[in-house]
Length: 300
Length: 255
Image (cartoon, rainbow over all chains, first blue to last red):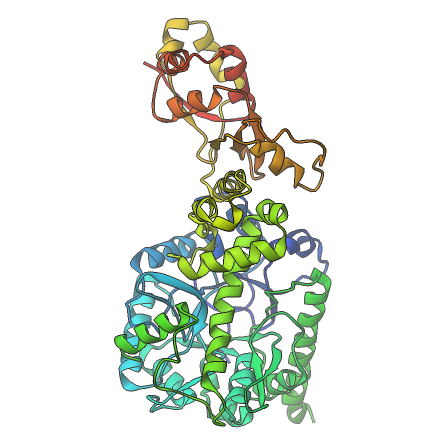
């Protein structure tokens, strides 16, 4: 597998790729602890929209992070799955961030969040039909062209399905990746949440994906609810440790991909840095177990 | 999803009374509206959280339950126009001013205005303030000083209030004095961010007029004229010294 080694070299082209190691989602309250960590994570992911002010502490902190870590720039506001083309003003702000901070990766979501000039602050579901496929491919083409990077697209967590869908989510994703050349940000928690919520088999979902396109993996926690039938409804809440079935799925993915950049996200009820770091360490252990398993037949 | 289906979905998200948009299904025949409400709830709660974080003193003044109920009504009326959530809440102070259930707290909207100014200051552009030494040549040349225009730091903001907005805000900070606040007192405040930390400072009477004048491009003498026209007692050398000390002046435009 061809992967770029960890580096903070400014000459590396943006989007060159994250190190195949474990990173953490950055929270401002963890800034000091992150810099004092004697065994820091291999990369840091930030939400692009938090750094779109003109100046001040956020951009100054990001500059300091960039001196020490490769950055994954993760967007939540492009609304790629929307019926409207990506907002050019927002693309210009992203381009400015990419130019200034040279992130190793830029990623966004298979979802929509803006409609008719209003931003819903959530990742909303789309029907997987041919018009949606054509539209989202046009949007991703525009993004990659404007930003000058190969982006990663994240699979969503959803609560509803559409009568209009004529593709499975995995077939739809495969078509988008093939048509646009973008990579996959495989959110393993989202796979578990979505498959549970729609009665699908998460292992079959993973098996159906072309994992060679995976440029990053996301791990996070979800919360548990029930629907009106009393069946489990999982909510993608990012406010708790990674659940056991998600660790199992992660191991299944690693068996096929080998080591791949993996991020632990914790956005709500954010714990002390050490707890987030310990969760990331668990991912590193899973990665090294999988490497040993892969290498075992060779060394035997 | 075609544009009309997307509009139906978006409209239903915004209006809790709206029935389920067409074309949605669940694998087990469970109530799709129940699941649709997960999205409605995520949107409302995350935006109420965003407002609660920006307007922390306002929240403390009315209590969390009242604040969240009030914020939820505002969120339903006024979704963000941008995915940059630091900008969200710009019209919340006006909403509070009109909110009938908050009419017994006439100062509340001004406290909210101050809190929004703080967030704007936090994200404003960086600039290097002039030091006192930069003013020395001008102080020796009063005619030139009088004709000088001053560019203020892009992060500085100020607010004129008929209420004790500074005292109310300060009383709700971690180290705030919860002692007596004279509710009939009018207070003006200055928000500055000399480096990366936002500070809030009480302003003496007249300063707001002075700052308004300077920021609109008036020369120093024109700014003083405006203050005199309003009959405000004003200590110019003290005011200038404060502006310099707080790092508010980033550029001098001399004739």
